[in-house]
Amino acid sequence: MGWLYYQYLLITGIYVLEPWEQSIFNTVLFTMVAMVIYTSYVFVPIHVQLALEFFSELIRGQPESTVALMSKP
Amino acid sequence: MIQTDEHHSCNGTLKSHSDQKQQENNNLKNGYHRNEKVQKNGKGDGFHQPRVRGEDSFEEAPLYVAVLTYMGYGIVILFGYFRDFLRAVGLEKCHQAREREEQKDFVPLYQDFENFYKRNLYMRVRDNWNRPICSLPGPVFDVMERVSDDYNWTFRLTGRTVENVINMGSYNYLGFAENNVDFLKTVAEETRQYGVGVCSTRQELGNLSIHEKLEQLVAEFLGVESAMAFGMGFATNSMNIPALVGKGCLILSDELNHTSLILGARLSGATIRVFKHNNMQSLEKMLKEAICSGQPRTHRVWKKILIMVEGIYSMEGSLVRLPEILALKKKYKAYLYLDEAHSIGAVGPTGRGVIEHFGVDPKEVDVLMGTFTKSFGAAGGYIAGKKELVDYLRSHSHSAVYATAMSPPVVEQIIRAIKCIMGYDGTTEGQRRVRQLAENTRYFRSRLKEMGFIIYGNQDSPVVPLLLYLPGKVGAFSRAMLKRKIGVVVVGFPATPITEARARFCVSAAHTREMLDKVLQSLDELGDDIRVKFSRHRRSYRPELYDETDFELDS
Image 1: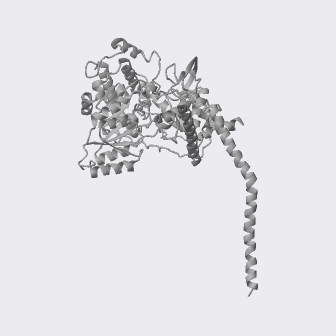
Image 2: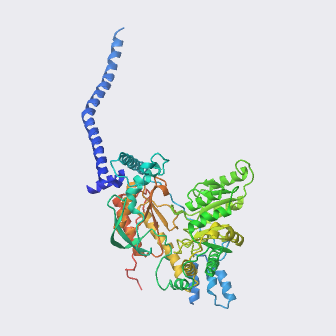
Image 3: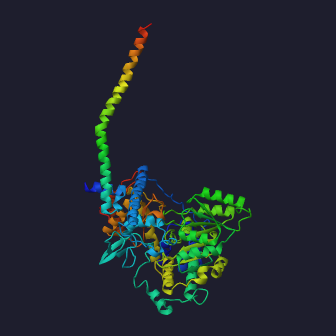
């Protein structure tokens, strides 16, 4: 766990900063990640469901209208 | 016969044709051949083939490394702006120099933004440079421990020293930075005779007989007519190029030339054009264009065209392409200025530099320049070439006319180092060191490549840059190596391109196999810990080498 944190410090370049600056950056990053997770948890299922309904409506709708046209004359 | 043994050992890897020439000399002298004859390698133009130069490697890192590097720099720059804002508002104490309150309306004296990089990035990792050393910079040295209470703005020494730190950063290629009393006997004698200060310039009353001896010896060592020595290596370049070229001349200089060459070129007032590093097509195109179009506005012929290159480039470890440059120089009738600061004493079968490495005649290069700081363990520089050139420089160079002459102990150290390399002191110590350096270089470089690090440069150069790329890893690498008692030099932005921060190792003949093994093992562990093994080439697995044979020999 400690080694992973060390890698994170090195890769983002935070390693050179003072501890209070590291805390600020960690807080900001954590907040942004938390917001992304929350948004995706709340909104992604609903959006996916709506999108699926829209496309299946489109596909089902097509054969219906052509059948109607054929049986009109 | 002892002499024959010496003869063979001094000739290193020369092909057998040279032995013919030695045989002739033997016959002339009734079977006893004097020591001097052994030192010459014979002409370079037909007695042995020019050595095939290994390829320089400049492997590129995977793309994600570049992305992460830029991201790292971006984050630290953002924090830099944040801290600058805090300092400007007054929430934080400003440690830097500032103008007084009464002078606020004047023209600003301290350019605030220019020091942004220094203030916000360099200061944070500053403890990796300027470390105080309290012993001589041999293969191991002692470092004084220092700590900082306010994040590297001020340091204080704790009083303890870290002992026996392995030195992988000093330019001590042949190990002449030593304080062995036997080796330094002549230096002590000369100091007793001449004192330490010269108190004059070479032109006035500072031309001591020991200086004449040194210059003769340097000329003999290099195989040219005449040489001149100066007190400072940087000043040799920057003060002598203005004497050689002026307005109306053209200088074609390599992209990665040292600051001293660039400064000398700018001071001279000549037109400077830069060609891509070691790229012969770029150089030829520029030569053709220069000769066809002439000077920029008047289209008159250029008075002189000077090509400036270095033997080994100190930040990349790459070797110059000397045979091709000489061919181009002859074809287009230009002059060549070769700066052998890092390569004299360090490459070549007998340590004569990059000219011997390629088997080229030293008379073909117009101006040979080098320094005594690196392989000879002293200070200063030299310029060598034809007698007319050196005589001209004696009276027209700024360094010769105005700078104080070299100090006698330093001159004697160079003399004894050159005599040691040439074998004049009666031992094979010099040649042993040259061979040891070549062996150490090959071993170190090949092991590092196998481990998977990205190493730049030619396989024969003792300068080994190891690429680190990310700004966070640069500081972490240097500190972790010091904790393991190995001293390294890391280089970052202004000296290298911003994405290519590196650690630069300088292999020395004084390093033993155990020291190199210890360094390699630490690098292996650290490379896995910090994750800097970026190389994508397949590594060959090699079993461990052991010193003694531990198998039974069948009789």
